[in-house]
Length: 33
Image (cartoon, rainbow, N blue to C red; front, side, top):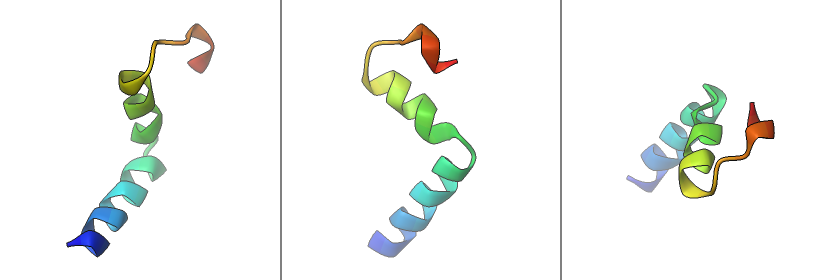
């Protein structure tokens, strides 16, 4: 299952959702746009 999680995480980052998760996990920075 760990390999699947890594693959999914890489795919999410490839689609740019990684930055969205970062915004959720920390205060919003206007310059992130």
